[in-house]
Length: 389
Figure 1 (cartoon, one colour):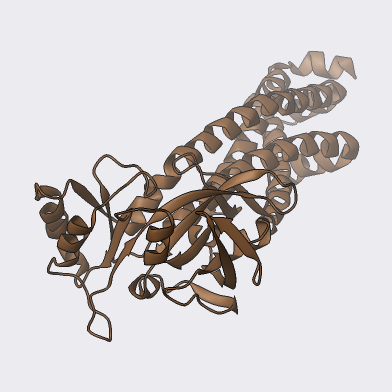
Figure 2 (cartoon, one colour):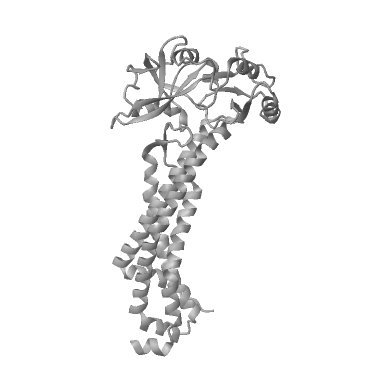
């Protein structure tokens, strides 16, 4: 089969600059929305999954979806702490952190709107269990005091959470003595203080979660069975990474479904625009199509050539939209986690899947918008096409 050169296909798009720019621009906007939504969901998942360490285990009460909902009394926490297979630190102490986790409401710095923030009580071992956390301003809180440190996102986004400022909760004042950065993790959206001080301030007799490091990660299944099979405990254990991955699932799915639905609705307009452009191209090039057929190019070649124009149009729009969406990685965003009802800050993340899905979506729009006009061009007879000249 004799095929029409690709250069002919590309040249025809450049010959109609205005309609090409307008149609590709419409597709670019749709791809921009589509890619941004995927980047948003990917950023949320990446933030929460990165929060956990692969060899850390998080223990909460059976049936609890979050640490905030969980409750572990001191005897149960002590039993977990005594289990074999838990790693020890350089000082010989077991790497176990028994932590209270509470939600408080703080006003946002820019709007004054109230939002939930996670307050976490940590221990010295708890700091060791989170090597990604480092103090970037001030210093770490002193155990046994009403000093706290704020995650970078909290310090930037909420009133009273910057270094040197004071927050009032649990009927007392807490001084912010440091700001920590936890990389791209959910800890950046938390406030940390001494675990025992928080237990007293919030009048709690037990903890929300127990976190420990495995001496041998391959022993997780055995430790999990031991914890969940002990009738005294009524607890469940998860790898920390899996726990935080589960936290992201509901919100990430909601964002993906909503964004994809909106993108599909918008894409209808872009497809119609591409179809109008290609129909106009066929109408204005009837004699040219007849000449191609007279030169020996079969109907299939004409179909492929015009369909190629539509696909190239979609590809150009897809690349432009994807490039525009990539700049969103510089924009921080915060939203409420559906699982914890706490504010969480994260960034848009461009992944290989997003790139491939966005370009595939753009090509699909080009194919759907260009197939009928291309089929019409292929059906034209040589005599009718040349007579129209």
